[in-house]
Amino acid sequence: MRVQVVGSGAREHALAWAIQGHGDVELICAPGNGGTAQLAENVAVAADDVAAQLRLATERSVDLVVIGPDAAVAAGLADACAAAGVPVFGPTAAAGRIESSKAFAKELMDAAAIPTARWREAGDVATAMGAVAELGGRCVVKADGLALGKGVAICDDAEQARTAVEASLVGGRFGAAGRRVVIEERLEGPEVSVFALSDGERVRLLVPACDYKRAHDGDHGPNTGGMGAVAQSSWGEAGAQQGWLDGIVQPCIDALRERGTPYRGCLYAGLMLTAVGPRVLEFNARFGDPETQVVLPLLAEDTLDLLLGCAHAALQPGRAALRTGVTVGVVAASAGYPGRVETGAEITGVDSLDAGALCFHAGTRRDAGRLLSAGGRVLTVVGHSPDLAGARRAAYANLDRISFDGMWSRRDIAESVPIWRSVSMGMEVRG
Image (cartoon, rainbow, N blue to C red; front, top):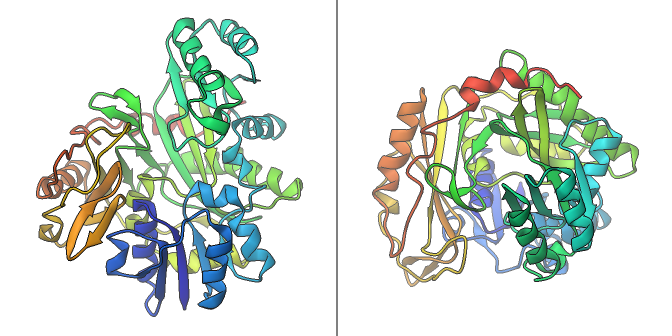
């Protein structure tokens, strides 16, 4: 079995690691990173270079292309693979609009009666500020398109909202992705990331996770792509996951199929568990990062078989079988992240981790036998234990053996996990 994993982040390293567990698998990572180089053949092809990715897949006669990042989805890689008869895990560009256009996602949620925040779309400052005023100033401003996880501004008042609106619509902060914005009602409650695999009709739920988007301890600082995550195999056993499936995930999959754009891949629903039930903050058209790094180690099923089931419209519905315990992942970042970062620092200590710890690479590369930093988020170190405290200790104890110039991380990942106290709030979906 030959599998091509598309992308270069820690998510793709985790996918490659999980797929390798199938047994007799030949892995190609395109472009991959310093970590995937140790378990696969890295090929220097950009994730969103559709023609080059397809050429690689056909020349190597791959049995499955696994799409990691949103940019490859939006570029239409799944469409190209399907047209060429190459099995692919990942949605088409049309189905992927659930992530690449916030306004499209909100419209679909309203049409399918999926609970979400009140919202308005705007392409000019006056319209946007009118929506801000309707919400009393306290709101969320989102770039409509893909902005590398940085296109969301959580605003306490109208002045902050105007700054965010003007940065996107006038200042061009997010380029084409920010030419239109979505203004949303600001909700309150703990957040949970729900992951579901789909073959276009049927759904298989994975373990949910909780991620930490703010840069600094105590949830302060700017939004990032994610500074860590935690997952527990027993979350939602009392019925919460069935509510998420019946009221949110399945209606989304059904709506996309009915529109002629069946969704095959991983659907990521970011939920807020409010006092009146769960509300969808966003849908993403792929596995999350850093959540994938804590979700896949808890999976007790063959990952490759699940991905093939999605690609070949043969997925068995239900909830995935899980290993028991808790996983905690902590991101090691370069100085300056999520802003401008310097790369090329030598990374040491990765080979000194405990046997049970995992280290997934993101912004790394190998040069003349040295491991070097090559991005903002550099590594995710994951600890696994029967309990939360043990998983945290394992993650941080192993992280602290790693070093590179400018390395930093949040020190409070999984220190407080509000979903532990609030998971019952997700049991019922109320419109």
